[in-house]
Length: 284
Length: 275
Image (cartoon, rainbow over all chains, first blue to last red; front, side):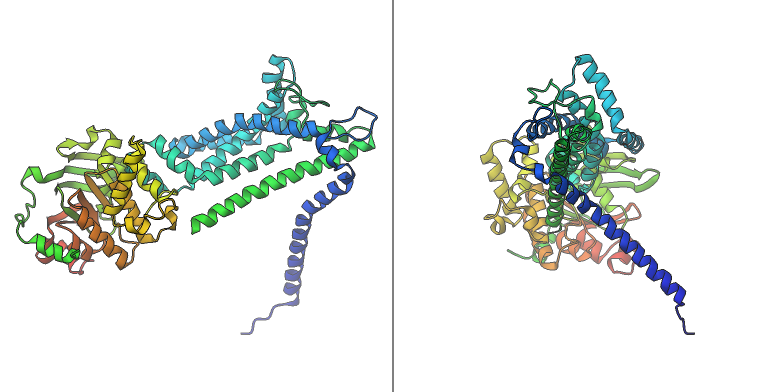
């Protein structure tokens, strides 16, 4: 029997192929569209001053976001110091020690925490850090972002430790090493590039968070000394500038958006490259 | 160096133990196993194993897949305790002392293990061999260096790696990696060395090197090897045990197991008529 494909089937096939192909092209172009749009609107503000000067008082043009760039790094360091050790050690527990039932429950709790809206985490940080201390601060912003980093830190740690072959644990135990020694001298070093890239992706993810910083780090038009003063950050600066009436500030907001996105992309790509190099090395 | 086969023939002649009673003299007994039962959950993997393993001899265990020989090996250094939901009954005596009364890290230092698939740490060659010393508290660099060299020599690997001790272990070939794992196990001077099918992933030349080195080191340690390869057991072992369905069916002088087994199942297995 000769099978013939009806014209209708051919047409539907071609239609599906072109529709899904078109959507793929659209999805890919979204990123480049955003990059281009940011660059187009912010390019004129992207100069050396943007990276080295403080914001100008209202009404004057020019000025930069040096304090917000440094501020973002400061808040992210506090967040890392809080979220990463907690998440890492909990991830070690989850991967290496916990029983099946508890791991299931714990993982579920972590996923729920990951789903808590960032604004809610901001309110919590406001209530437990800002209110008792009576002022907005880099610390409060760091606590909010640190809490946001915990779930991903736990899950990436668990995932990369689980990927370490059990034969390495057995080799270490068989030499008379105890479990803690085995984990920290063999398992963690074997997973280190995964853990580092996981940390970088985690940082890139929270670097753009705005809502939890609005009423914790607040913002600042000047340099913020130490960790206990309100502090400027790139996302909050973008928000404040974007809702202001001045055209010059809009431009600076676009430029800040571009800088933030570029940083996040660089960190992301570096993390992926670390992972790729690692998997290439392990195949050798 | 004489080949393993020649040495087997030479050695097997005079002190041939009594049939069916390989070890009577208790001073020669390094490991005593009495009424050992082992369970994975409700599945009983080992049934009433009783055996005495001789000091400074090579003892081999053969048998079909899933017969319990690897499980048996892993109870000797308490490695099965790392597997959830398992249970051991009976006694394993190391120099007369029950290993379950000893600290588990101490048991594993005294009873070393080499695994089926070579599993070097993702560290340098040197650090791989030094690892066991360091976790057991050896801090003096000179002591560590000396022990690393000695272990690599015993594992017949020193001349091949002495110029690249700081290279990653993953740069070695499969056979070299397995010898590195043997060196790593030897570095802590184990009294017993357990090998779980150490050559199953290796080519004949690499296998031969490992067999030769096992022959060399049996003066240092008591060797227990699990193998799928009957020729290997015949070449290497002073004593051989045959496992089937979780039972130690027969245990005897190697020549007797292969030439004149007393149990029908053993004969069927060693002559290839099994199953």
